[in-house]
Image 1 (tube, rainbow, N blue to C red):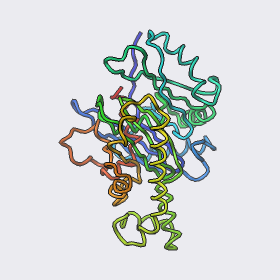
Image 2: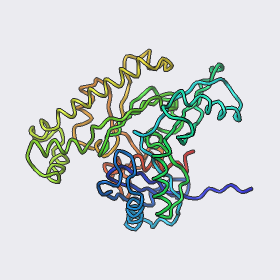
Image 3: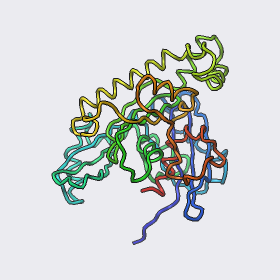
Image 4: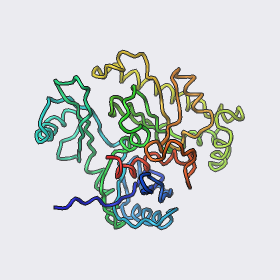
Length: 356
């Protein structure tokens, strides 16, 4: 009888860190209310799988106590799910009535995932079709194994939180970085995080392809540590200070990993263009027109120029506030733009309350 829209906050959980974002309204505009980042001790989460629900619940509770900005009072959470454990694809199905779509998806989904439908949680959304598209409709499906999701739910329950929405992190990244209702040419989003790098190809209003590789910001730090024989803390400071434009020895230490990253990008783009015959824009074009980078590793000095030079594609740092702050706002209150790159997923999660 009553539509309930409780307030929620975004909770982005990775293997090593937990990030929280709470947005709010000020007049007609959105503002940052609360944010925080907490380290997750080793062994609690490994490659996206929760190994200890009780300890994760304690980390969540502690993070909420240490939150910056306003105290978070709501118990409702929009939670990210690990992309590397998820399955996303775009299905083409006949034009159907709303009530027939889910039945069709249930019938078709096992052709796209290597699991039985009883073993996964799944959801879907309609992709906006072209005006002249009358023969079929496109549906974006997302499925995550129950054995991956259930421990996250158990941790939330033990932390006395209630999941309002569960979402694969690439969907949150797109919500953060792509202007709402924008009709843009195919582009690649690269999320260079602490533990992994994710690739997201976005076109015609939807994610078209995702992949995850083990190259990460942490691996760059490790390379500096080993080559210069310094501890990880010192290596991180050197990486932050020098980047790719400072002392040559820092650049030389990171170059093998960065070369590997560029080759992986090329390989994934080649694979996608040769296997996805449905994307006419990408087939007609020899390359994508733009790459957006985000994640904690995106703030590495000189990375934009390095990738652009080696890939021969325009590269720019994504703006995770593009759907939150007005264009005239040049600096994010309380949270610097550079630091906010690591909050891209959390910002997208928090934005869902106001976006969809």
